[in-house]
Amino acid sequence: MSTDKQDKTLTEAEAMIADAEMFLNEMSDEIGKESEAVLAQVKARLKVARRKLADLEKTAIEKTKVVAEATDEYVHDNPWASIGIAAAAGMVIGMLIARK
Image 1 (tube, rainbow, N blue to C red):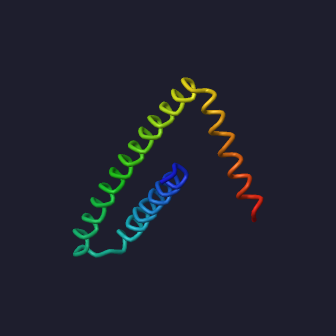
Image 2 (image 1 turned 120 degrees about the horizontal axis):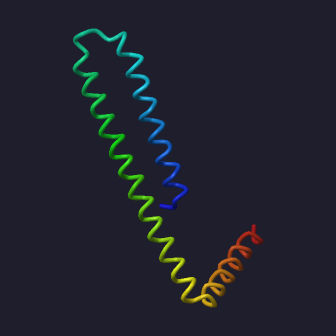
Image 3 (image 1 turned 180 degrees about the horizontal axis):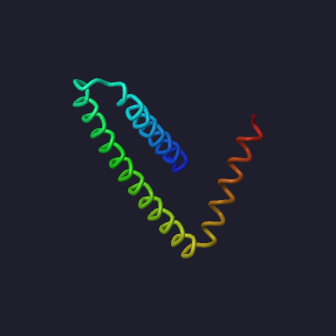
């Protein structure tokens, strides 16, 4: 999964959790006493989901940094090969765009 897709997925998940928490807070005033246990359970699960999402985001950032460092090292060790790869990729992308 690309980092843009990961960022979008994380942002959407964070928004969903925030919306659910806001909805629960608004509904808690209207819910009767018998539903308080269910409400507490849902809030606890949302907390766990938010924590897991934060862990996922941290892991994604760490993996992205490792890949960026490896790429940087490769480019510094092999500058001409990197230029050739970039030129070939640019040529292929240009040909694909020109075909349409």
